[in-house]
Image (cartoon, rainbow over all chains, first blue to last red; front, side, top):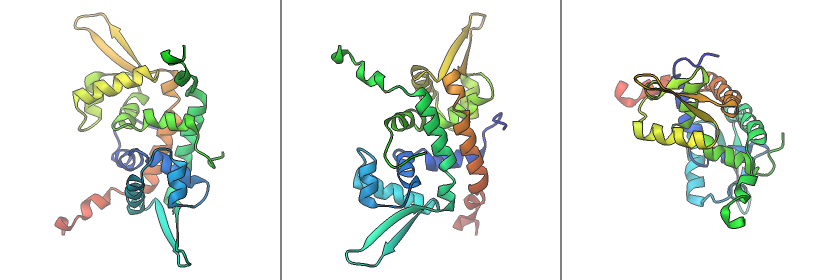
Length: 114
Length: 114
């Protein structure tokens, strides 16, 4: 694969995928469809407002789809489209790299712990 | 691979990797070491100030290394460490996805193009 020059498709993909919270929201949806509050609970620190905004962006990008079940109370589920599901390769590559290279112990070695 | 629950290593990796400009800077370094101005030219729209800041963050994360050649004028080159080089799987996965799913024509279909 040739990375000699920038690729506009890569640039555009990154604009969508690397927004704050988005890689965490995508991970939440890899396993199965989830409701809004399930996603918010999965992603620690994410506000309702930003989750709404990101889900809307991902819908517009054709990565996430929203399904409304007209029961009482109404159930709304978010899931990955085919385009979104194919991001599994990306999410898995990040996970593999993180397991190999990211040390959590650093967090415990703060001066105050000493 | 199990994505049922969030993984703190994944979260921490994303904090570093998904910052604005970082995925583009990493792509610039995949092929070979580059000088500061080479990276800035590779990444369209990136300012000197933000490039400095991102390179410093990537150095602190052990992903990029800075090498000074004491000639005249001094040459400074940035390259990936082993930890950084192993991000190739991630960058390639994004590239493959982008080539399959990202349409650039959308950009030309604005109403003004009529």
